[in-house]
Amino acid sequence: MRILGVDPGLSFTGYGVVDGVSRNPVLVEAGVLKSPASQPLARRLKDLHEGLVEVIEKTQPEMMAIEALFSNYRHPTSAIQMGHARGVLLLAASQRGLPVYDYPPARVKKALTGGGRATKAQMQSMIQSIFSLEKPPEPPDVADAIAVALCHSEAIREGRAMPNTKRKSLPGPIQDAMEKAGAGKRGKSPLDNVIEGIFRDK
Image (tube, rainbow, N blue to C red; front, side, top):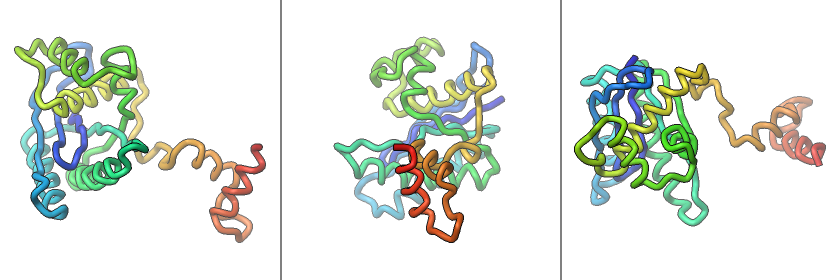
């Protein structure tokens, strides 16, 4: 089973292709897709999309695992930029018929190091050790992408892999509130029902 792991980013998107779901996986290929900041946004996204399509066609993975979107209140634009990049990467996978699985950064780190707060240097060192590489993968985005693929491999072994189309599409508290409120029923707007659901829980 061949897995394409992706660490999305507008400037640097890391990718890693891993064979097997055993505890001794094989690293097929890894690298980084670059989109220079000097280029217009549309051109950068086009380059990322075409780059991943080329990787998919060359390595022929059976599925793609990608780091889930997250936000940092100190750097709100980072999530927006990642969202742009992630969108075209998901499009590339969909166009090639690949099922997509996503994993939060903390879960990826925990799968490799046992803790969800591992540094980039620790992730690089772990990937180097697992595959007996001469040196740590550079840039760190490459190691992160390989780690995402390994995280998915572990999820498959443990029977916990689930395509992102079957997961809750909204943050937990919001999705839970919508389900409890029965968003959209009784002729009210979804927001009305969500608000009612939140207050019923208090």
